[in-house]
Image (cartoon, rainbow, N blue to C red; front, top):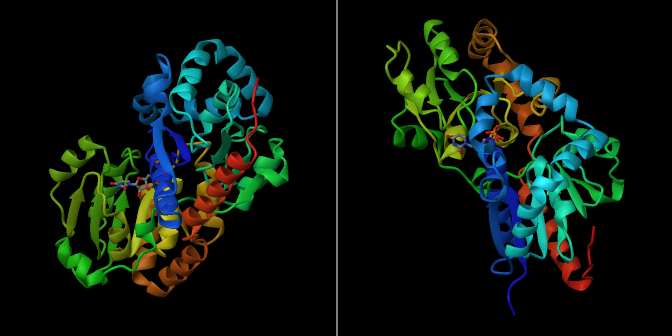
Length: 382
Ligand code: UDP
């Protein structure tokens, strides 16, 4: 008998949706070895008609147009507004989405992208598959995440649950678990010095990790250069992500402080473990990983809308600071570097927000949906 299948729908608009889907797939295999077939599908790239198939390429450009993004986000953030939006697009999307479902039958479909939910729910005709949404924004979650026809909606925080309820989702369909994070973040780590030696970093000096997000969004270069000019007693480890232009530019700088510059790295858990402070944009994945690594966080940019709540969440829990200007960032760094007890307190607050078992718990919740799908096949029609 073929193994039950779980289909993950994501898109590379930012790096977080991919990381989340991969983390859950990994957890499924660890919790239920060999029991399920899993597949990941970039819904925009592989099935959306023109021009939506370019969404992964266009999305990073919105970080340069924050006001426009914020307007679009706010105007569309409502159940009725989403319905109007999708009613308008539906004739255009219907064929490709039905084709997707025909070509990728699955016992459970898991969405880790807000824009997937409504169109896929509409496209489900004569299918037995159950539909699970794993919300991958921490707090300020858009109404598009919440479709009342979903069988289960997993959210990372209580604040997200409140938004789900406000969006009309019944309480019994909501589970508060956490942001899915890869298993390697919770595995025992090598000694900090061992990691620093392996990567040719300095030992015995505060280490600041500056990360530009999966797609390298945010004005990384500007902040790196200002930290360099401030003459702080630290080494700077810069991860430019997929922002090749920033990486090449940073390599030309005449650095006064010890420095390492990387493009996209695969060993982020080790880098976080070996660092003392994380400076990053307000991406939910990176923030949740930092909580697990007990890293004090300085956030320097956010996508308005879905990432605004992340900043408040970090700041209100004393797990870090918001520093959209270089002077604020330098002052915060200076304070922590000069008074490590303050930094330790922030590190402790960060660790209290960690949800290291989230991926495993999400995997179990999804496996329960597979069982329900097999025990009680239901016919859907729209
Ligand atoms: N990331 C990584 N290597 C890099 C840069 C980023 O593995 O060089 C990962 C990071 O650890 C996180 C994801 O990419 O898991 C970024 O997701 P997040 O939700 O923070 O931001 P997004 O890119 O989705 O806006």
